[in-house]
Image (cartoon, rainbow, N blue to C red; front, side, top):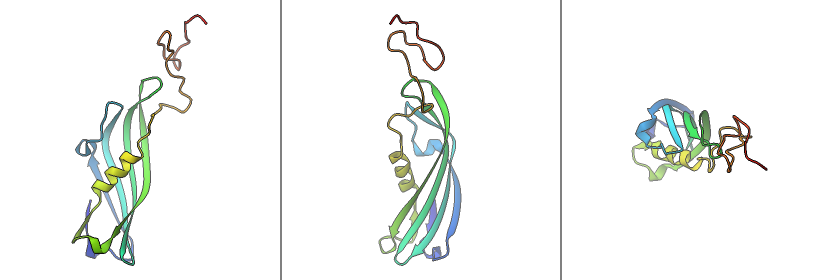
Amino acid sequence: MRLDINSINEEPITREESIKASTWGLDTHEVEFTGEINLCCEFRKIDKEILVKVSVSSLRKIRCSRCLQFTTKDLTQDFYLSYDKSKLGQFLEVDDRIREEMLLEWPMKPLCKDDCKGICPGCGKNLNLEKCTCKK
């Protein structure tokens, strides 16, 4: 998303954009973005600073770190970006910073659900779907 610096003033300017997830290269063996990454950005000048309120929504297919099954999650992230206007050129481009913020919010151990029971270390059964057959 690119915006001319001179068009940003005290009144907020809202821009929306949808980006093909594959163009940002965020997929890993545990997370796959499906569809598009939807961005909604509100730009506002405050003194010598430009403040950007960002809302990102995306559909992600994640591999649960406990049961190893894939599940689809609709995730929304809201955050702010700030820029010193004197250090910018004619245009403000926010894509790289948004991508960076998305990566910083990555869960260390993604779960299909909060109470996921995982896999039995003995028999290897998914404890969310069936009971363990191991002898105690």
